[in-house]
Length: 350
Ligand SMILES: Nc1ncnc2c1ncn2[C@@H]1O[C@H](COP(=O)(O)OP(=O)(O)OP(=O)(O)O)[C@@H](O)[C@H]1O
Image 1 (cartoon, protein in one colour):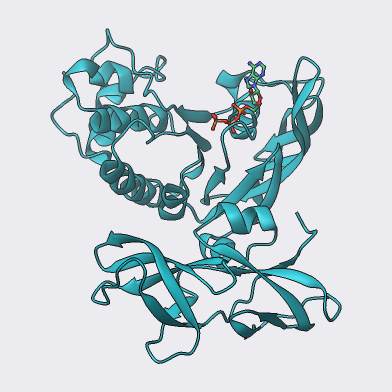
Image 2: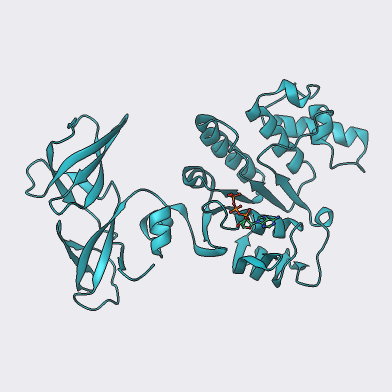
């Protein structure tokens, strides 16, 4: 398969401090990807390395079969045909919307600039606002203009660093979906950096979960959620708790909620101590079940209510029940486990 972008074992340092180490990824043309991870894990550093602002201590980056960064060579950012969108929009305050959008088109004719500006404004659904100045636009509108400016020179790759994080939550989600549609309509390859997993889920075909300067897992959102390959990914992505148990055989674990069997095999030995990941949708309401949990917390979320339930040993599990079941703190609630994707880790597997 042809890859548009390839990072081979890159490392990046600030002074003597290595913040990204042996980091590799491959991105196919047209894919929309996300680097997701906690603050300080190195996401922005990787993005800056791809853009050409961050030198490499090791490894190489190639774009469309051209090596653009190694330890010894860095193609200047302006020659990489990479567009960037930043968290703070970074529009030029003294330029109109049209002049912002056409800023990267210095060598184009006036006629072409006007045409591209019209097309870009239509693309981001802001027709008619070309004469305004950035301070006359809302935050969401400014970010659309920043996107239009980045797309106007037809980049090979678009990089976005926390592009929606200055916006309120509703707008963040809806703009993530809308921007995804725009990029797909143009077959643009993009990488977004975020620490907001819902935003990453709404936006990306593939997500790389980054932890301490390294990719822990590179997968589609569904697989990250249901098939996390490390304990960190299981913990970081989605909600859930780890319930202690021990292995019975390769696909069954004994826990205080009984035997839990899944559709995959592990290489653990019988009796090995393990922890089972239970997502709120794995713990289901079952009125007549002999397995009970005591409600110790509840968060109403419209269609469902998220309950925290205390089991007899004191372990806690989370469960999302349809919200017409309304239990109170202290109630004993019957539950069952439905965890076909049995996700479990050996206790020492961190
Ligand atoms: N210019 C710099 N000089 C020294 N250290 C830096 C510099 N920029 C970043 N770092 C350090 O490098 C590490 C990775 O930073 P980076 O900004 O890449 O992380 P991040 O995952 O993007 O974090 P955030 O989500 O908070 O932006 C952090 O420990 C940070 O303190």
